[in-house]
Length: 371
Image (tube, rainbow, N blue to C red):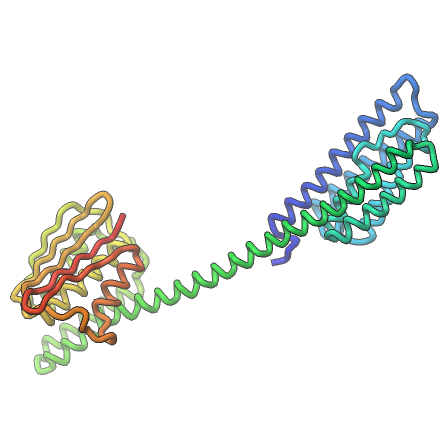
């Protein structure tokens, strides 16, 4: 992104141009007071011309700020800008009046600091200080003029430094945001791959295992293949739509019915409360399906108990069997059913799961999604 299009740059430009507008109004007010005073200037026309010049040049600056902001950074504009401010500084001496320029001569210092950083701010400050020093030999008060020289230099240095600090902080922030966006994109892609791998494990790979087991039963193999084809098509073309999601209880009943028909193991489902279906409840249902399928395939239990509860702050599913149990710590790392399809899947959705099992005493898996 071009630095000149950032919010910080636009804000800085509005500040320096706004100061130009305010200081020109300040100059006009002091000029009117000078002309209308009891002891008016020797040449009131010079005062009036200076007011017109300051206001006109301020309007030009505002117009460029709105339409062609890049021109405010050009050297020719800064040179002309310093010339206009130099004239406002010298005009009271020419007009034979008290100073009426107010804070206008400081505006090119701020504008140069915005346009060219500390170098530009100091260059403009030195130019204005030189004009101020030239007034010492004229009618101006030498003490006041000498103090003004230091003010210009100090203002140019501070303005250039402050603007540089703000720009550097803005660049650092934008770089951090860009790095965060890249990291989030990589993480999102990794989560998509993990979700796809978990879904393929839960559906396609398990169906293939069933087909291998029942390969002699042609009608069963054909039924499994057709069901898997329908489920895979629905997942590929309907995932994330959300319009066809039922309530959580209906999702659980449909899932348990499908697993029971496929694996021929009775599933006792009890649901308490209900919530509208969402991506998070869908993840919980898929994790519960993997837990039920694992119990149906490996536990040897004659039935599986499933308890689902929807509370205001969380949704919980318990899957329990009285089968043979297993050594959870001894599960090989390449077996990803529990780790990926249950644990990691719930973690990606902000949930958690815990496994309680012992050889010979069955298995209970608790799965929770916070609402």
